[in-house]
Image (cartoon, rainbow, N blue to C red; front, side, top):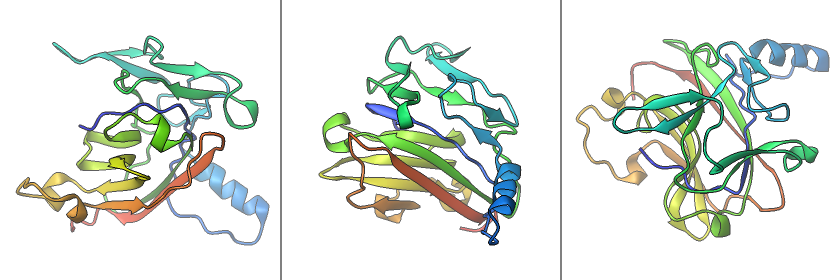
Length: 222
């Protein structure tokens, strides 16, 4: 697994849609469609629990991994990751990541992600505020992963590449490992399902919106 590196400020507005929605010319109709499709939303303005969740709204912390994984409900990162007020969008709240090797935090995906065995479509949205060149420690930095197994086995993630000036911002869209790499061979990065953004427009003094969308996944093919 890649480790999450240091981020100065991060707020997640996590949106999962059951389909790609198209505007139909009426704002009320579009707003109603979005509300029906939304399955999870966490702005952090009211705390660390999600404001809207079809499943568990609680945030969890992996407080230890050895000798066995220990998970606690709530934010228990000993200051390595903090919920901070007044530093978010329009003076709201946010999560601030202070150290590279901070304890992992997560929301549970069951029911919050409306998964389908075929023709699965959706979107995820988040906001980031940082200067990748001056505020990230060396190594990969993953603001968000969506997976039940590993980063290369049935997952979506966005990350900053481990090096470069500027560092690429990338989307990873990995099918099940047995589908895209059935022999589990070492595959070079340029042959992996990674989609880089060169010279991404992030800044220390400005929030940047990130959104990725997928359509008709789970065909059983590469």
